[in-house]
Length: 315
Image (tube, rainbow, N blue to C red; front, side):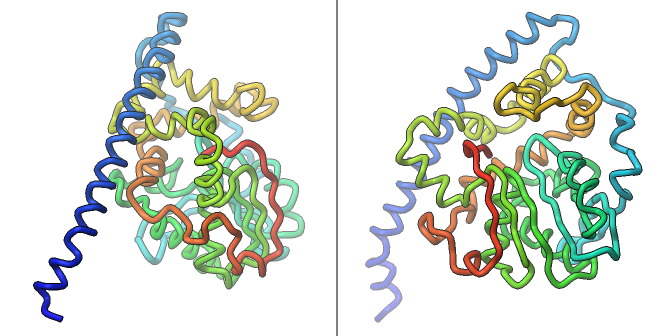
């Protein structure tokens, strides 16, 4: 069939897809503007209630002591083969068993796994990484540097770079979303998987479509689609929105001490410290974040020893 005829036949479909995409982005940015207005009011309220903190986050020049606790493990860096980026991780128990790899969520870092590092280092080689864009790991500024394919390649490079052919993958929140996809596309590298508080993206998508309240609970995801403004709002009144998130009575981290709170805020307070983590969200509507299995656990995952702990979905 002549190329001109094929082009003509496909033209209506291509136009329809472009219109649908334009409509989707109009909805996304409309929701983003509404969320920005809401969070703007919240941030300004924090500033008015605590005027001495001002409109910016206080820079932390020295990390809290708990980040260098020797009982948690040794701080190391790994150059990733695929990207050349330098990833920071904390390692303990090398030579004592299989690799147990921990992936954190937002707004967190490797320190989220401090109790697990201490608990399992006698039987496993435990490794908690700072994901790309977080903490002491390299943080490219370009949004396109945080696609699912690149993030999964990071996990592959960590496992192989540490000298292993498979691992026990333990993940939470955003790290769990990466783990679900990693177990699908790299099943041979995952021996067991423990997932905390994050379903596969397809399940999350299906749940949101049938429970409209989830969209309202996930309003921050739309806010994070905007450039620079989310970073500003989150840092106002010395990162009060992040503090509230981390110490929330129901959804925060239980019994978080002031020093441990600073362990999370320290990295975010550094120049550009929020941009990398927020770029994960900015890629949700851009690339291949959605699973093609329509909410079903894929066969590759079914072959693994899988443990899930599920609470309200949060990304």
